[in-house]
Image (cartoon, rainbow, N blue to C red; front, side, top):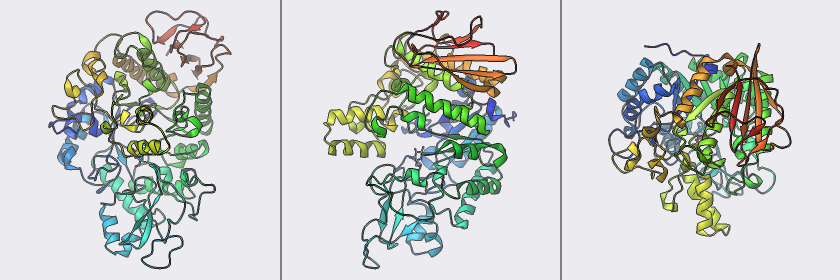
Length: 564
Ligand code: NOJ
């Protein structure tokens, strides 16, 4: 087996949304043998690790993030034998498997919750149960214990008659939160991680892990909204619980990443400083909210690029100063496709046009900032938003709830569909586009989620090995990340692109004598660039054919000066 204990700072992680990657048996769902069949493609790209989204048994209310059994494979995705084969075949190519650990909540179908409902006190203590407000006594639910709202809309509490209590669910009602103050819960979660580590897994992604430690006192959020994430995020014992988990599961030194909801810089430094023995790196999401009008995901606005610049600067320079480490990404299975979001709507699948330039510009930025780049399946092809013509094509629980909410707020069906098309998580969950055939080469059956029309132009067959394609550009960036010390390890500092370039983000990376300067334009028009101190430096990389014009960036142009 090839050596796969790699330095995560020099590595590239490729995220696979298992349900949508490759279907080996024609049932319309991606599966583990499908992934194994595509390992050569992933090795060609140069991926070091594959993060697989949950494939554990689940009623699929939240597409597998509602786990019914942490230590098994859902038959719709294959068998444990298929998993072992995938780990071995990936290992032969020097690729490590990272698994998604959803330890903040279980599914209501998990044995722990079922036994709790059946009356076993031991398992009732695994969950966060409360009496209702204003209840007159046993059997009377009263009102939810607090005004907390869950992430997908509606109260964060569900009355369970068999328990005679309300249980807390920060996400869907089918996802009851675990009570991490219970040492038995913490030990059981560490056992789950150890189980997979012992099966040859090389790393882990921890789902909403900064929500595991709830406030000491669970009480109303002030005001009328009920948005409780900020109250719950980075709770009082979260660092202690994480350290304990890492130690007990024996994963210190493995590549690990925490998904941190509504987090802050100070906590992310603590999550990821090596000396704290918590995680290798963290995902934060502030940079992906710059197009939420008034902070509302379901209200559209153009991306605010100066806000984006400020957020990236503070996270890049702040994590560096504190000794933390960022996970770098634009897309995942919870996000619309960044290429569409940031303006790549013209010339889809062709050379030239904003699609190509935005896709490559975003890629250059995330590969050249300080941190570990994540490629979400299809990014490397330039996959776009789905562009569905009917709400019936959507699957995601959050999107459907939002559509209903928008209609209730007075939007027309057309307006509501437009918003959901822009913002739905399903944009990141459409089948991987392997070919131009019906089914996109993802399945020979009926795909579980409709294939976007763009697959006819944007697909692996049209791009792998084709000079100038999005795929080949990504491949170059991966190689740069592997080969260059200044890219992997250099210091980062943001630069001022000048008053005539308000939609340009520029930064430098330095290591010893080496210096790289990166300028990325989010502007659909050309703009004049201030002096970034790179006169006479060679152009290492661009996203247009030919050399950039001096002092000017063309629409969505990215230029990197210096020597790697
Ligand atoms: C974050 C996951 O990425 C998302 O898909 C899921 O719905 C929530 N956590 C709840 O597990």
